[in-house]
Length: 220
Image (cartoon, rainbow, N blue to C red):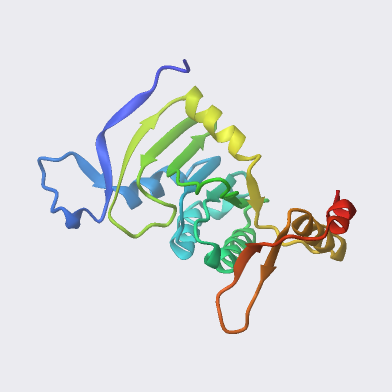
């Protein structure tokens, strides 16, 4: 079962002014709690249905420079609207480049394949050597909205098992550098009968088109 686990009696809230929470509610600032947990973390995993790039980068760089090379970072988000694909990929690559510039070693910044449905999990895990601390609730990575999370510490076998298969669904933000890889990706799209078209005065869209069998046999 992976016990024992310690559930905090405090709830963690971003922008509590929305509800005017009083002293009768045991609550604390979510952003402050995340910044405290990440300070001496040796592993950070953040899942979200969406993200906000600059606040997310600021949270990661809360980790002292001397500790960054020993901290494993994983940022994994969902992708909902097809029209936002180019901007999201550009953001993911920018986040990864910034983290590399800040001396993090090989950070994983990725998007979960949205087929057949949108990935919408909100989960933070901070590992302090062998002790994990979890935040589960409504907050996406870098969110500036009103959010609510609960915190608990200790091993949780089910959540750890949930995290593992997600990595088989990831599309990482590492830009393919070789012509061969770009051609390989194009052939894969053609083989699936998918074309991506970028218009000069409209948003990009993906469409499934019937293709000659000769192309399918060429890419099989």
